[in-house]
Length: 308
Image (cartoon, one colour):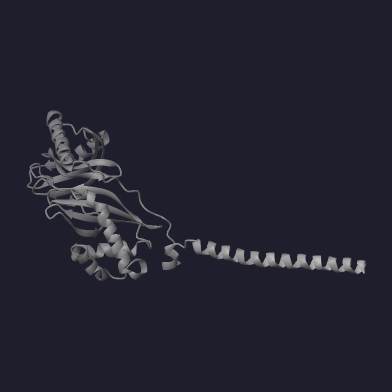
């Protein structure tokens, strides 16, 4: 009887252990399952994959410039002062010291190709900033024995009172010397500090309209968006269409890469660069300093650089 009791006791103990192991295993299975569900639910799925699985955002965006401009009225006076100094130096020396030696030789060779040609003075076309720094754009005005004045345009980068580098832009011709910055005209609000928040408005408007990427099929679809943003539709529909068409899903693949100011017309122009994997696109956002509002969003670089 004692042997039998011991035998039963062993079986009862073994059965108890099996039951305990089973209960523990079952509890952990549900616990693991709960943890797995919690882990999956906490994961963030990129919005771009939800919107369009074929369009994975790669975070491509150009480097933006700082829009901390300081007192732009002083910047305008600095630009006017630099051109005044350039003209004074030229009258005294007849040398174009604001150009490199090679640039000066190349320009004077073009000027003196025919007799009776000469550079009379330099005029200011605009001033601004890009990724290379602060600049002024000047016209070297060539006179001869005809009524036409030939304008050789250069972008001059400066620091303090010194011209640091020069870049040739283009050549134009007209009956009057070009001058798009007027000394006695007050600059007014530049609009530069409002450019970033306004571009946020444009971005939000495009996203909410569902006219991004493949959905952007016609510039006319952006007519009401232009009006809602206070922009001229005739000047802005095509720009907004191309910005949307070439955007990523979050409309973040662009940056402000420059700005430029002139008095004729009294505009501040803000330049944007948009990047895709293979291509770069440029846009111009125009602020009218008479009405103190943004009025145009155009494709390409719009500037007094190219005006006659």
